[in-house]
Length: 82
Length: 166
Image (cartoon, rainbow over all chains, first blue to last red; front, side):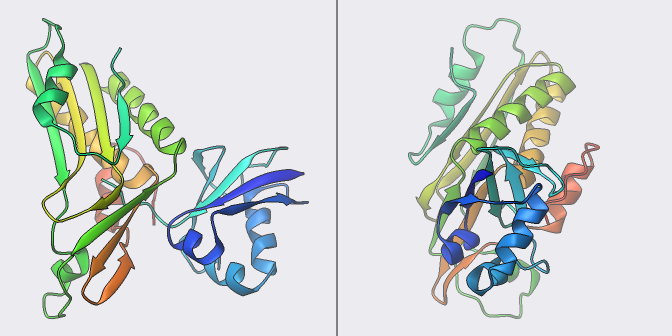
């Protein structure tokens, strides 16, 4: 299915603002694993040792959340506003 | 109706915001506000006073347009449900800022002070760990992304919310 991926802060600096992607992934976790498997900057920025948070359709989520056609998935570091 | 959440690059005026929050609501007996400002020392400097790190020269604030507004709106809904308050608003700046600049405003109105104080603190604790903003500090040694603080997760946990940020 088609998903829209977005990156913010240090992840955006490493990977760009995001991409449209055709993916067999069924969950946010599987999508992250698929991106890590790409190697290079993706493997580094999304490494499982790093604190990366995710949002599905603009709501914070844990990575077990299922993807749906046309959904928006964002990956970013812990937030630091306020 | 006034917007409850605003994300903007421009500065804000506290008196104007509080006047708008109160409006003509004669039930209001308490208004509580919090203003966060840019300080010249970053967290690492506070923790390790022996380490020589330069002062913060500027702060760059990034956010996730759309999600930011949506997440803070739901935080205000949650505050309205938890506390006996009449109105609340949040203004958060993004973009380039400097020490002493105002960054964020959270303001709440209620009949009595207790609910306003609590709701204002709740909103800030929530926003700190759940609203998609990221700070980057520029110091004489270069630019660096600010690390999230464990203390902020603990502050939210006091309200019975376990939503770890880090």
